[in-house]
Each structure stands twice: as structure tokens, then as C-alpha cells.
Length: 284
Ligand SMILES: C[S@@+](CC[C@H](N)C(=O)[O-])C[C@H]1O[C@@H](n2cnc3c(N)ncnc32)[C@H](O)[C@@H]1O
Image 1 (cartoon, rainbow, N blue to C red):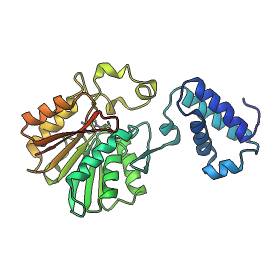
Image 2 (cartoon, protein in one colour):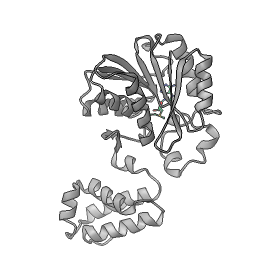
Image 3 (cartoon, protein in one colour):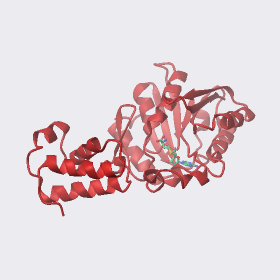
């Protein structure tokens, strides 16, 4: 056990431990973990840096630091992730929202002129981050998030309540093949599982050992979810409605071909901030 020391000295020890495993911002992560464990704001932590930490606080803090050093994602340790400037509850039942997915929100917004009332569905909603971020920026939207993971849907419902969207957003625990609302939607967004099964084992420990494989694994080709959604969308979506997919950086050509073969029009590809292909959009 660590002997009682000041918040500042414990921070220094924790930052050194996180640095030793190669984390990019050890000092910052240590500080945020301490705030989370001790229930302190940034200002409160600055003001008590020279105070002694209790044994209980120290133990809880170094437990979190050790879990982080072993690869557990910061967002699962704190239960919170940020996306489009909004905080989302996040648990091991949900994928951790990624900044790259903000391109989905941008592309969706570009298809929906401000002020227009419209209906949107988010297939594989996870935390609900895509749908909720979109709805916060577009007051005319109502929507539904669908996920076959009951645990994820529970988290998504919590996020809907936190962001005050209960009257406009419903979260359903369903497989997207069981959902019957396709023809009511003006826009369908999805960040489906798209990593090839044989690549999963090569991902960082923090991803492969902690994030749900059902949110990552896109089958042998990585395209299983696109094939299923495009086949359902081709049969059930209403004419002129939009479909906006997040894709892996090397999947634009294959997803474009699947959409063309299913008769979709106005297909375009958008890039993320790293200039990698990230989103494919098409009109029914
Ligand atoms: C890559 S995660 C995306 C989560 C969230 N939309 C995001 O961008 O952070 C994919 C989600 O799709 C869900 N999913 C996978 N296959 C599904 C299916 N056939 N029906 C419904 N949900 C599915 C998974 O449970 C997972 O939560």
C-alpha cells in the first residue's frame, strides 16, 4: 500500500507509472483520474494539492491508475466519454465514441436543412452519441436508436435523459432486421461493426480486451453489417431518404459498390480530419 502523501506527490507517482507504459499524456490522465476518484473539480484539486490524501482515497486512486496502466480505457474507468462537445455515459457494453465519427453527424446535418422537421434512425446506436449529437443540433428532428445489445440500450436511454431528449428520441433493444420503422425515416445513420474478424486480434489491448467485440467485428470481409443494412434499406427505405454510413478507411470502394448494386444514388465519400475516407452517404 502507498503511504499517505499529498495529492501532488501521489499525482507525480501516478504520472510516472502511466508514463512507464507509454501513455501519451500521463500527467493529464493521472490528474483526471484523481479528480474522478476523489470527486474533485479541476479547481478544487489545484486548491488541495498540498493536503494529505486519506488512505482510502490513495487506495482507490492507485487502483484506478493500475487498471489504466494495464490497458483499461480511461472512458470505462470514469464512465464518461466526450463526443461533439457533449458528455456521454459509457460502459463496457458500449463502444467508446470516437472523434472520427463526428463526420457522420456533419454529413447527416448537411442533408437536413436547419429547421425542417424530419425523422432519423441510428442503427447500432451504442451510447446513442450519433443520434443525440445530431438531435441537439437540429431541433426539428425526432428519432430512434436501435441496438441488439440490451446493455447498450440502457446506457443510450440514460444519455437521452441526461440530454433532455425523452420527448423526441426512443432507444429500442432490437436487431435492425427486426425493426419495422424503415419507411418512416428521412435519414438513417449507422456506424456498424466494420473490422475484419482476422484483424481484431491485432488491435490495441485497450480495444480488443475491453470494448465489446459485437460492436467491432464485421465478419470475414468486414462488410457483413453493410450488406445486411443495405439489403434491408433497399427493400424498406422510402424514396429520397438518406443513408449515412461510417466506414473503415479502406472500405469506401466496396461500400460504394454495394450501394450502387442496390440502386442507391448520389453516392459520396467524406474524409475525417486525418484525410482518411470515413463516411459514405447515399440517397434511396
Ligand atoms: C461500432 S458500434 C457503434 C456505436 C455508436 N453508434 C458509436 O458510433 O459510438 C456498433 C453497434 O452496433 C450494434 N449492432 C451490431 N449488429 C447489430 C444488429 N444486427 N442489430 C442491431 N445492433 C447491432 C452493436 O451492439 C454496437 O453497439
